Image (cartoon, rainbow, N blue to C red; front, side, top):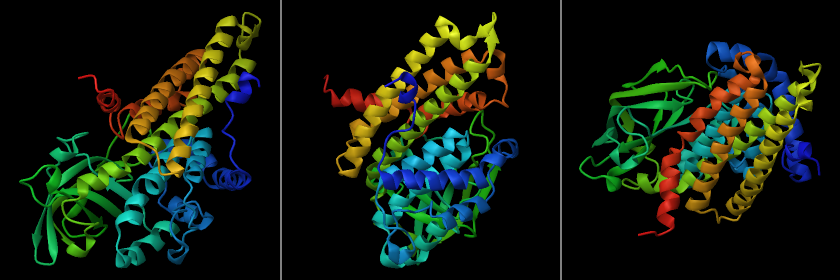
Length: 389
């Protein structure tokens, strides 16, 4: 096998590859012509979610009776990220991944029957865009420190507080919101409530300007005496911490998938560039430094992909551990940062121009080491598992 072959997408089954071709067609028609425009505008159009729903790319795990395909196979979700990042559509990748991989499992696991009937069909069709609101202005990775309160008042919770850095925050119609139903407690006082667009007292702040992921909408959310029906409680009161941590392994694996896909795209773009760009009378791909840099990048990518596929197999068997997911998130996002940086260097000055996908990928890569739990937290999880003291 050549090193070039190693940067290709992983080998899935025939049904996965058919899905990949279908999603590639969707991207070519509805996304690729608009990537640079959406980057400038700082958001993808809301209608894109409905188009994705029509194409069957949202909520694949949702049972057929609620409009979904009933396919519980994470590899289909991984393909969506891989293909969107292949064309540099990071905003689409993050938005769809959050909807499918991060938020949907909460609904499938904890919704009662009435809630399933109420929300799942819209999640599949794209009429409902999902978001999850955990991070607050004063609280990041420490979930127990969440201060947003939800105090019972008859048939409603009265919610007060603020959230920040909320992915899909502008487009979201339904927000899984971490609140304190018992502010006197830490972990045991945490609950999840579903806050819907149009709820009195719920407002959105500004669309946050970021150094990367420009076309992915990130927002502040505010709750001022927002009255949320008690029937919007997700699961049981006081179980929010357990609910949030139970889904973190899949969320972190999704981030690892995107990290590897971003690195793979960066290598492919760079190979194309160094074959065409000339210096000293020859393509810069003929220079030993270029060959060595890309050889290292391709090798690291192949190693990361192998571990990632093992983790996906474990997820499918219900065996993915917190530690393995943390290791995948840590390694693959650090890999993403190293590879995009080294590839950008081979573009020279053009790598610093935002019109080149490698420049956008470089900026996009930085947040991967922060969200989903900062990589320092991943190291702490892994360090504790070693029982050094």
